[in-house]
Length: 385
Image 1 (spheres, rainbow, N blue to C red):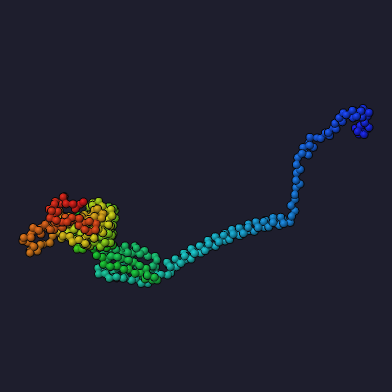
Image 2: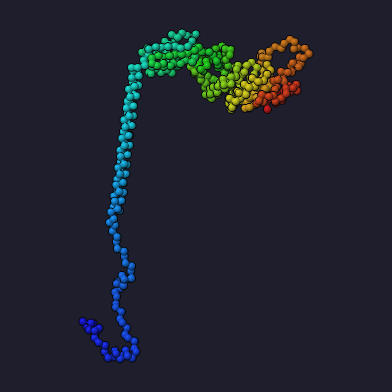
């Protein structure tokens, strides 16, 4: 009330005089503003919250939620389908195993019983009836219960003069046995004689006095487990593997008339081809290629019919020189009567020239085989270079 009275009262005479005198009017008092109110006035007004009540936004949100639900439903359905497939596969597997077991049981017990024993082949050492009876198989037995390999091994040991014995099942009810006469193709030299072997490597005869004609003799090995009808085995497995490898190469390149295979030193293998040619093969390094080169040299070159050493120990190179090793009987053929006389000296020199001839990889002579070359001693001849 007092403040309002002061504002409404009329100016006093003193105030009027001061104004007339030119004095500045009194300053107007600024209203006192609280600090908190000033800050609120200077700060920017906050935007009012906007509430989205648009129906379209609600429909989009509901659609996304429905899509998510559908996706989850599809994933759950796929998982259920995979589980059903796994169960179905497992059931089919069990059914297949059951059917297989039942089928095998029926085959072993009811079906495929032997009604006929048949022998196929032509043999002279034994009769077909003897071979069939020795198999131990009887009519009425089941084909699939038989061990055909065991039956064949029994027949090999019972009939050593048979080779290539095979026992086969001929469905539905026949057992077929086939064989042929065994022929000696290899002989192993031992202290008590020769062990004769068939083409399948089985022993036909033990302690034979001599090796038959047309077979090659294997020397420098020791046989282990000698038994007629059994397969050959050595006390040194390395030599056995080497012999098989060499025989395969000889058969591959049809190197004929191989009479001796000496495996005394596996680093210096030696074979005798025919009556005159002693072949040095060295180690088993590139053995197949060495045998091929020897075959080409023997087929293309007219070597002298005298004892000759063919050195094929170096792959790709074959050299020939005369074999001066003394023997009890001279292997060279007799000379015709008309060759003697004035030309006798030249006839004695010509074989030596041929024996000193060197053979390259292509089969061409490396030396001309002149009389000077033939006069050299074996140590001076260039056959080993």
